[in-house]
Image (cartoon, rainbow, N blue to C red; front, top):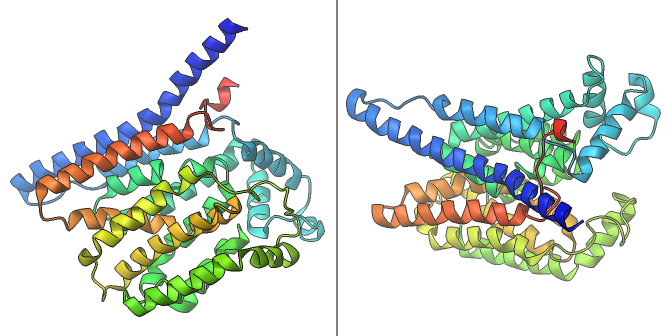
Length: 373
């Protein structure tokens, strides 16, 4: 038995190395792309296309996500649901009384028309999530590789291994954020409705169409602080209301109804503090920048609330992607190149190590491929 435990720990360490390989691959490919840009700019005065970085990274992340093993609880649940939904006809699925959202149910059913292998479900979900995030990075990030690194280490990439349906809805919201930036309310509502077909919590993003556009002013911060304090004070009542009318299946003993570990709020709070310290680099008249900054506030807020009930952290997931755009932007505005290099190096080390430590001894440890079971 002792020998088996030693072998398991050794195997776990090797397989955990996959997470390090992914992170380091992003860093190396990103730096290589940046160096290539520097050389081509000096010769031809034009950038190397971003797909020199995005395509190989997309393929790597797609492979790691699609062919992951069933080491998370939700993987087994999604497999069971895929098999269950495909026992019913399209019309029967409407009247069967399933709790999951119709978009998710019918996605399973449509995939099931072509195959009974659940791996295709995970392939399609992984492809869509990655495409939404990386495509949005390509359009709006000033540093794509840093945004991707943050997405993998501090964002929702590995979370999508477990709460796939939720991150799928987050990806829809993030991909549709162009309408949020352009202040096209009705198109934004359509995006949110589409996302709610996969996870109903996305509905909160309708009022946040207005909230995230708040001007960066003291009076607005005071208003946000007062509303936040009231929410914290009345949180128990809010939870009871939600349990009574929206989440009847969640009791006090249900999964996620306890508080999350305090270590989980380290990065959200650190990102908020960093953003506040560099607030002077944000253009208050730029709608997009205001939305990114305000999103950092609510990302930290919902994670702090999650110290009481872990499930609230799911709401914070809708705001997390905007940090992946804001932090690289703030770095780009640093004029002191030595300070910028120090910050960048420190951030990379913190992200890679934090990600490795958080995943170690979790449900993600050890990582293994589906054919290794």
